[in-house]
Length: 203
Image (tube, rainbow, N blue to C red):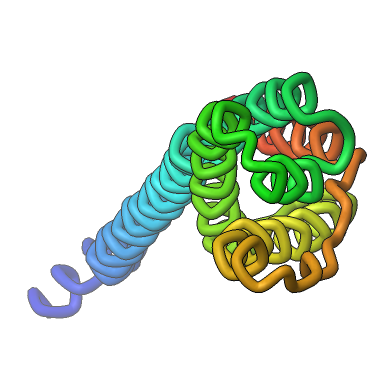
């Protein structure tokens, strides 16, 4: 009788809570852990994206600083030297140089030869930079004009290197490719595109 009264006096709701509270606590802990894990994953992804952007920006800055800007400076130098040679020898620099050498005009050749040497050395440096930059080219126009400049520079270098034998043997001057007049504008366009990409990545 006493046992029956004691059983009857137990509140059924308390019995239910005694069962569910541990379950709810456990579930709450799992949910909390899941939220914490989710925030951790999001933060990790954000960090990865930020670091990726910084790496791309750093690479863009490097390409501008170490490749495109030096090409621009060296190109301006070659154009300046070329203008000086045109002023001294006239149109057809190599041909005029050969004619001056055949006439025995040592004064003219002595002034012009260092400029020719400097011109081809700078052209070779530009070619090296262009070939290294080829995989990173952004604009099709720059790729096209770069290929034309490289072809022009190679033929010009060969022509200058062959000058002693041409003058001595009276051989004809090797064929040449004209300077691509659109190359400076294409370079400016490539620099603008790379600069714009750098600015966009920094936002």
